[in-house]
Amino acid sequence: MMYIEIASKLFFGLIALLLITRILGKKEMSQLTPFDFIYSIVLGGILEESIYDDKVNPLHVWFAVAVWGIMLYIIEKTTQRNDKIRKLLKGETSILIQDGEFNIDELNKNHLEMEQLRVMLRQQGVFSLSEVCDLFLEPGGTISLKKYAKYKEVTPDMLNLQAKNESVNFLFVDEGKINEGILEYVGKSKQWLYDSLAEEGYPNLKEVLYAEWSETNGFYIKGYSKSKENIKKVN
Image (cartoon, rainbow, N blue to C red):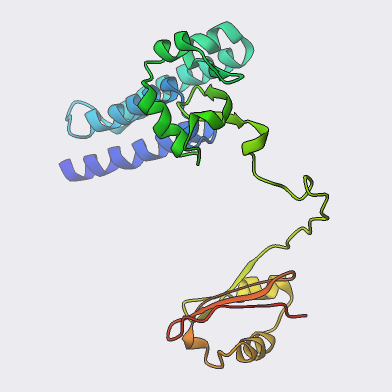
């Protein structure tokens, strides 16, 4: 009987957590604010503490999660309408560097050491602070930056080139198996695929580890027995 009750608590608890998560919206881990992190821990704690407590039944789990979810929903709606409450609960963007000048007060306020800042910049592909014009610390703890113009990547517009948009890549073969749904979606037949692979040097489908195709670039193929890479436009 105890095992059935534990299983029912887990089942009802999981359903309740999924419902609350869907109601509050989708967020990546990098988008979570400290407030989001806290309510996620509490939701998990409600379920964890109730599993092995004989005095708590599945309805209690539902009630606790429902009350917590309603409170969170009210807070979310309130923060959407009131900027002061939103800043208080979820924080706001901090300007760490502006026009190349450090904002020491903001660095100290966010307890950021210079080496921590350098690590965060390296994760963004920036290896010198001399490249940074403006730097922002977002509420979720990630950084956004603007480089000086001379350090920005060169784009076709800068060179007055007419850039060509690439079409979508489709995975036709995955570990020797044809992705029939994708093939049908693109409007290609199996015979066309067999013939095309043979032209690329892969007459045996089982030799193909990976094969993708696009209208602009044609095939890109990786085989099991060969380290052959072919990129050829196929009309």
